[in-house]
Amino acid sequence: MRQPYELSIAVRYLRTRSSHSFISFISAVSMIGIALAVAVLIVVLSVMNGFEYELQRRILGMVSDASITGLNEPLSDWQAARELVLARDDVEAAAPYVEGQAMAQAGEALAGITVRGIDPKLETEVSTIGSVMTSGQLEDLTPGSYRVVIGQQLATFLGVDVGDKVVLVLAEAMVTVAGLAPRVRRFTVAGIFDAGMYEYDRGLVFTSFEDAARLFETRGQATGLRLSIPDFYEARDVAMAAAKELANERGADLSIEDWTRLHSTFFRSIQLQKSMMFVILSLVIAVAAFNIVSTLMMVVRDKRGDIAILRSFGATQRSVMTLFASQGTFIGVIGTLLGVLLALLISSQLGNFVNLLQGWFGIDLLSAEVYYLEDLPTQVRPLEVLQIGGMALVLAVAATFYPALSAARQPPAEALRYE
Image (tube, rainbow, N blue to C red; front, side):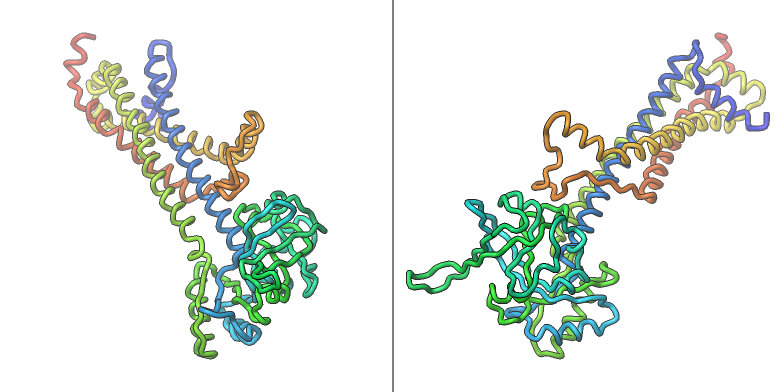
């Protein structure tokens, strides 16, 4: 035989035969257990990876990498501040904005919103709002037109479409003949966007920079500058350095915000959940892997006569250990490979499967109001698959140690006495 006889015998013990069908069945159950445990861990982590990636992509697309704002007052002379920031090599683009809180009213429907005044040309350099427009154009937000672009969820809630009127009510009061009254301004819906994230589709409204400045009475000054940074993982450091440079140049107090600070709770909770799920589901893999112990112990008990014959022909204890360790390793390798293939298949079709369940049972498994996303994203990371597969193999090999040692210590004469 070209291959070591220990491997040949180990493979033969895994094959189904009528006289040893129960042993083969137990081996198959061990393989399936490892496969399911590996698949579950990979699928769960791929869903959490996809959720984290989609949140990060959509958040960065709407809030920009970082922003610099005045500490207690608007950012005056934002044009000069923008030029100074753009002179840095680590800043790709900068766009001014005016932001404030208001209530949107259409008929009897009311919704609390954030109003953001932007320059359409500059805004597309720091956000993806232009690419998520479903109707209308961002360029329609011209100064003095009093037009707004709203999210799809807000449009549905208010029951409005492009061309309809929306009233924005500010909390600030103005003095009239009848007394104090809230400041009110009527706007025309010029476009609708769908960012795919409920927080923005339901609560963010865009208008032109000049109209927002009039609405919030900033006298043409900006709330701050939104920055686009090549390496967004360095957004905080870059924004802080740019803010210090501006403060030294202008002698004003400034504050910064970056995407990690604005939504740190989301990403920290996801990382914590990923770590906990990895530990918990790793225990499931450990349980499935150590099922190999009981399987091999049954094989050792069933093959005592074979072990004794091999020993009488000169097989060493090491060869006997190798035989049964190889059988357990084969179970672990086959189970791990099946689990990885099953996980890849499930991950690629999980979104369709969830949509099918929602259609069958008429329920919303992924409410955008709760999970911020309307679909179930998945992202399989090769490094995590290798780590999970390696861990399963290590546990499977470790589970073979005691049964293989027990088989090697079988006394040949004792086993052959009753044969």
